Image (cartoon, rainbow, N blue to C red; front, side, top):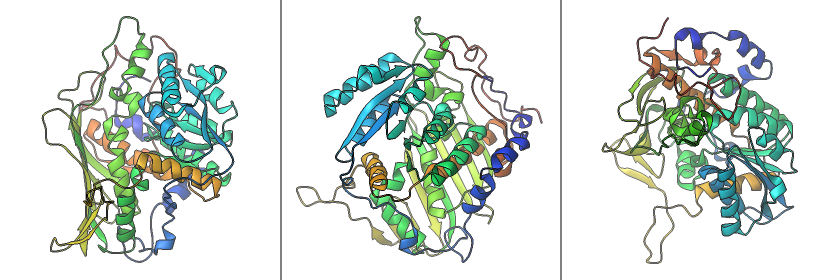
Length: 459
């Protein structure tokens, strides 16, 4: 598509698409993600610890048969994920790399060699839009998906069809069509017994996990409101260069282009939204939001959003994200319950504001508590993936992350249009961002880019 004409007609059509996907499980996805029973966090049932399905959270994955991983998307996050995988335990290696840009692949390959002494064979280094399939077909056991997220649904489907275990970075999609694709593929992966971990690393961060246990078992009572924030300074960007074609420029500047990243409410703030979904055990079904573009330098996105998310039981979550220099910064979550509140990360308070729990961080050499968990969560998520593979423990985070992405998309669309947007509308939307075919050349997006104006979309 390429253009940014976010009319309600564009995202309210496409019920037939959901009907087709529903045959492989979308209705059950919606049902299974909505708790029922006795009152708890957001209207569901309080749980016992053994019902929470938390990975073992070992300091290192157990030894076992060698696991070979292939990396698809060799930029900063893909390279980081490769190093995290290699640090997760014994008998782990990287044997294939794929990217659309050779210099990024070469950089990743060199870093893996210099930091982990792992040499990826030249014949297993693939460049181009078809590199993902070549990596998958190269004989790997695990696929690491870290391209710009618009490509994630197709790559995830290909990996699961080839029966590969998957680590995929968040977000897992940028539009409703992509989200539904990931949901359907997640169901297939589950039926095949594949292990799937996503980049929502707070679910693998030990302080968050310990607070989650207490919230899920009823310490703060029924959740009645929530706040989610990712306010920070301006993110990185790239200016176009004379020797870059349009597609190369956008891919190198991908966090600033809607079709590639989903805008930062989806690409980055999904972390905080996912924490609230995780702690409440459900997700909002309506959104009214606003946002604007004030100081962003490149691309076609906003640089700030504020969204009121509403749940079926009437609970509200206020979501706020911003990427502007010189402003107040805040990356956090907050949940209030009938018996107390929590910052989700490490502390719980009673109704009077008294601290009733603090996560016991490891001590430093002076005997003072640090603010870091024992194992870096970026490594922990790979430890958990490898542990679940080697011990055959079920783990599949794709559906939960897809739902969190759809919530973020719902907020984005509301801010762009100025309209109230519902979960049902998103699940029935045929919105698919980006060009119809991927070519390393002129695709007509940059010159036609426009910034959405709330209230001016056609009804």
